[in-house]
Length: 308
Ligand SMILES: Nc1ncnc2c1ncn2[C@@H]1O[C@H](COP(=O)(O)OP(=O)(O)OP(=O)(O)O)[C@@H](O)[C@H]1O
Image 1 (cartoon, rainbow, N blue to C red):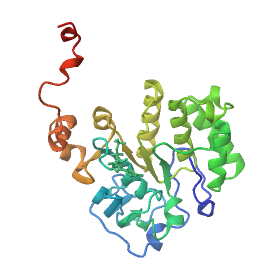
Image 2 (cartoon, rainbow, N blue to C red; image 1 turned 180 degrees about the vertical axis):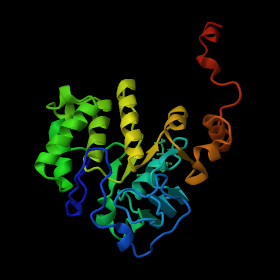
Image 3 (spheres, protein in one colour; image 1 turned 60 degrees about the vertical axis):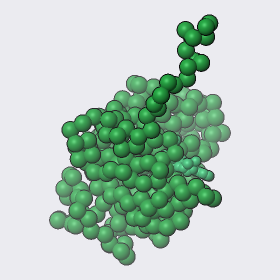
């Protein structure tokens, strides 16, 4: 993971996994304060002003991005309610990574707006990024550090004091089953271990919103179950998670909201029940996205026909 802008450092306290309060309530500083029907599902949290108007954890408004002649994202609007576990699904090349990259400050949109808890990410990146934990697609990590050093470094960049960050690094290494490899260089990690250490770096400052691009890719089933439990706990405590995934069954079991995207457009979005309409998510996905192969398939691949 490349470090976020160090000037975005914000000291946070509290247990790992418990989303930190922003040091400055972004709802007070957002110039274009957004009101939305999508509310905080957990109601007011302790310390929050009573009956504060609900602001989505993430709002994407008219996002566009093209690469040369290829339009990767074509006017995406998405509202991720605070306290939701939001799944983003779509076929290969649908624009999920491009959308999440624009939503997290990694890729500048050609047009549109990104609001993180009401703060315009591209207008006030330091305030917005302090609330974000990001697991990007193919994260670029300082892989000549050990796993433990990498988490500590990520925490220090976020302004945590050394004692706090060391304690959290140990918690995270244990939670992600990386204790035995804490002192191994990240360059020597497997793909799944690399994914987990990048996730640890995204969690260490206890952000309010986690944006995870394919967090379970290459991760073993036991670690995946541990990560799911950790994320579910985080959401129960008031945090918000948005994950992209190709695994419909996982999204169906894990998420309470889902958006289906294809060819840079949102085809359906809402609560899981609204989008599914009583059906299996995979069936809805296939119906909306299409693309099931028809016809005879690859006749030459059938071993029985090879001898004829
Ligand atoms: N840096 C780039 N340069 C050129 N084209 C790009 C670039 N990044 C993405 N694209 C194109 O934009 C489209 C959307 O890509 P994106 O990676 O966002 O899709 P995705 O939904 O994340 O796909 P996958 O599920 O396969 O990871 C694709 O057609 C892709 O080829």
